[in-house]
Length: 535
Length: 44
Image (cartoon, rainbow over the protein chains, first blue to last red):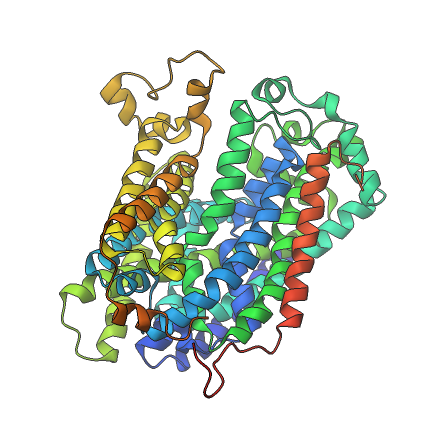
């Protein structure tokens, strides 16, 4: 216990030092919102990665790999190839240059100025401000549940307050500079711990191939319920035409793997660096970082079955008593040295804080810069910074309120909500805005609103996970989803397990292209300004 | 090549994860000093 307390106190000491350093260098709104556009590649890469990877990505998805197996490695591939390479090379560079040409400070402002539309900026700002606190509360709840177990003397409710105050102190005062400095430190801790975890696990199991082979040989132990759902083994892919196969491929792999491109808290980071050089270097650092996060979490989660079975004669999900989120913590407590579990707790604390701080920041600036500043006259940069601090404070309070009021299950669904809404609403107008001069203002509005509405419709009336929880479809139509009474295992019935993004994203993309082709191009002078500096 | 995995599909995902990391590292090293800023007199 003393080790855990000492570890947490040392960690917090460094966090507050970095927060103080950032606060001293935060003088104006560009510092607060874009870290002065002067970040170095290491801080950019680690901050981007640590924001992307929260505790739930390691504990939750790692636990899911313990149950579903290594098919989640497809998500590892997408998080590296799409989340780092495509995002930084094909989105990052253009976002940075266009952001500079249009003097934008937030993701909604970039979209708004690209299309010369205050409506787009405000709509995007409101969507982000309303939904990101719900997503942030999922992360907050996750880490507070872990801290409650690690330090039983302090209640869960008290942890909610303590963690909120700690993160609020440096985000409100130091803005994005504080967020990114602390992210880089937090990401470094996470990397070291994950490296130790994978090396130890493979070592315990006699090497890479032997470890995988032992897991392959355990296929007969896969629970009956999982086999019926479509999972075929821990090292074989699930049946695509099955509820679990569709959930794994469309929600976990496609939804998260593609959804990452339209996450405002990630896209904003491209505008924090002074040149492409920082982005080029960040590609190398970020690629390694994400491999260590998702790759290690998913492999260790799956391989924990072998270790648990060899030592205790049971598979991971049985040892964790059916709770996915307990697989990784139980594995660490059972097989890793005592000092490691203390430091791993610090690493998970770091993973949660790095994601939450960015969520608070992007939610707050969306409210202040993209909504309030459009209605309130701002005198100078100092007033703008005050308004941003107010916005961030409101986002933090909203997150705490969600975490306090809603049960964990509902909150967890909010993460899927946010990824789905962002991808369907923003991805087509973001990517076409960066690459296609023929994209028009009216098409951008219709695509954004159409993607949002269609995504909401799918979440509320078709996708069973959310529709069943929210209950609107039940209240209106008397059934959990619109296709609930189709023949089981038929394709209409299986639509309940297809992620909203699979349908809503093509719809919003078709709207963007179709309406653009039928409407008048934006004026050449404005396009020239947007394309200034683009290759 | 299969590294003990039970299907080609999973082994492929494993190798693609490693390959995409190598792609990121090689790209970063090759473009380490490219700022992307226009040289004087160069058109956009």
